[in-house]
Amino acid sequence: MTSTAEQAHTVDVERFHVYDTTLRDGAQQEGLSLSVQDKLAISRHLDELGVGFIEGGWPGAVPKDTEFFRRARTDLTLKNATLAAFGATRKADGKAADDELVRALVDAETPVVTLVAKSHVGHVERALRTTPAENLEMIRDTVSFLVGEGRRVFLDAEHFFDGYRLKPEYSLEVVRAATEAGADVVVLCDTNGGMLPDDVRATVAAVADATGARLGIHAHNDTGCAVANSLAAIDAGATHMQGTINGTGERTGNADLLTVVANLELKRERQVLPAGALRESTRIAHAVSELTNIVPYSRQPYVGSSAFAHKAGLHASAIKVDPDLYQHTDPSLVGNDMRMLVSDMAGRASVELKGRELGFDLSDNRELVGRITQRVKELEASGYTFEAADASFELLLREEVEGERTRFFEVEAWRVITESRPGSEAASEATVKLRAGGERAVVTGEGNGPVNALDHALRAAIGTLYPEIAKIELIDFRVRILDASHGTDAITRVLVEMTDGESSWETVGIGANIIEASWEALVDGVTYGLLRQGADRVS
Ligand SMILES: CC(=O)SCCNC(=O)CCNC(=O)[C@H](O)C(C)(C)COP(=O)(O)OP(=O)(O)OC[C@H]1O[C@@H](n2cnc3c(N)ncnc32)[C@H](O)[C@@H]1OP(=O)(O)O
Ligand SMILES: CC(=O)C(=O)O
Image (cartoon, rainbow, N blue to C red):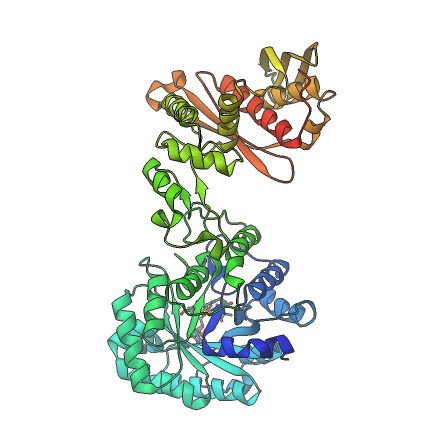
């Protein structure tokens, strides 16, 4: 079952196990439901990242997981990772060989089986409702049966840290029983996620000392310390780390594997993934977010879109000298990018760096940069926001650089009416009057709402002159009332997101009237899209 590539990788994988449980514990997150197809796709990403082990699920208990392991045999070719099936020790007072769920683990045909076992005496007595001695027997019997079936066994010692605090001798007995029966690694689990790094470090060191077993760590994030606890355990000698991509998992989640791995490689100088693989982490974090249907967390360490985004003017001015002055590491090492945010907190350096990001060299024009900075501050004070509307900022910047606003058409007027009749849904009709290519157009459009109707009318008015508009699509529309105390009199801010299928951009509009704000954002969005498409201006 081991390919040449696997053998070439064996040394790294064995020295330190990066064990991914996104497909099992990660899928225990509220709201997350993975199909077999999703699991296969995520496995391929995990393999590209170079994790050593992929825990695919619990065969026999969860039908989808049984099917995943069946499909994996034919549909999954792994270069780096080894598949692990997860399950529990046999039931009390039975035999592992006769236990249906244990047999399902064998039937999954994975090289590795990870067994969850009780290691807290209180859980043995109250949750398993058996004796401490029988629990040890369940562990010995199940581990040795699976080893006899040719499986490599890892043992997840559930509630280990709480159990060790209550009755250390019993928890140590569990570690010894598992290793004596043939388990390769005993993974100490902070199942309830209540530990802090000092407890974890001290316990792992004491258990290693008392048993000599190879230890792993499985940390949950209930105290916000899952990553710190994983690192503490590794510092204390654990050589196997379990985590999930983006930290998904039961309750508050598991240790984010990407953060732990980046910390090990970049802060501890311990290579735990194949050379260069860390640079794939941002891409893989986003691919897994997509597959798990979870909006990426922008403030996620290392891989989040805000992880290297800089808003404060003073930060930007230092970054202009050297990015290291305000960044803890080089974003490219994890496949991320530095970004400048332009807002009312920007200074000249922010605008200059943002300009550079957009392809404008403003370095020798202090007066121009100062003017743009001032305009941004004034516009933001009136309700605009440019950090979320890069495209509106670029149009403003071009206006200042080129001395005129980029326009593909001149709007003369627009109007919308919305009609509601009993028994049918309200519908809108918009009229747009504009000039483009030396011609005047007066066009109407219908839609299920006023913005939709305006969008249709605008497209109809310029579609012949600018066929590129067919590629441009409105994909998101967000409205925010800026001064809630004014109720319906308040200023409204609208953010519009558009795409041409290759990339997306956001624009902003404000107004006392929601439709006025929307129209401004819509026109800027279409203008920016035509600019991106390289449309020839004919107005
Ligand atoms: C810490 C973790 O996250 S471990 C992973 C947890 N994951 C899951 O639970 C997801 C999959 N689970 C399932 O599909 C089901 O819960 C099953 C198939 C495992 C069990 O289902 P059921 O038999 O219907 O029982 P239920 O879900 O109520 O679980 C209780 C049974 O599990 C036993 N049990 C609980 N913990 C363990 C354990 N660590 N090892 C072995 N058995 C255990 C209990 O003693 C009880 O057995 P009993 O019915 O013979 O008294
Ligand atoms: C095994 C496991 O998922 C836990 O103890 O949290």
